[in-house]
Length: 185
Image 1 (tube, rainbow, N blue to C red):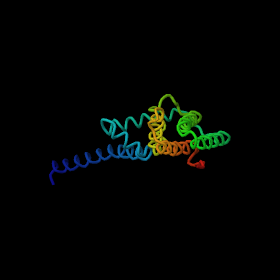
Image 2 (spheres, rainbow, N blue to C red):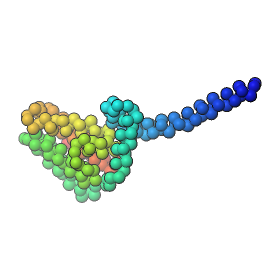
Image 3 (tube, helix red, strand yellow):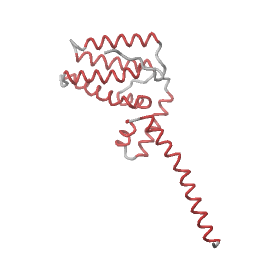
């Protein structure tokens, strides 16, 4: 084997090793983002101009989230929120529109007490996506019905669905470290 051929093989091997070394962290980061954001990863990629832009957006969300002081609820607060949820749910029978509005306010209050900023729905979605990406579709659906309920544009069945969706996020926000405190329906 000539020195030129040997050199070409060595260069090819070095190029492959370098490319592999550069690709592995990207694949690991993508896997991390997919696992952390769940369905929100796919939604963000779909809405972004490129996968790279979407992943950059998700990394920005992680950094913002890491700067927040998200805290678990004290047992007394958890009990109070559970009681308030029961009251809101009981209200649904006689006043479904009011119950949906109250559920939205209760979820927002719970977010605020946990340490999430509540300055606007889109920002709330981004902040929640880091830890609660699997329940964001529930929140989106509930919020959509809540917005339509003001002009009597939501049916009672849609309002009932909104309550179920709010409850999914409410229960997740109420939990600490994976220990979900189930809310009775």
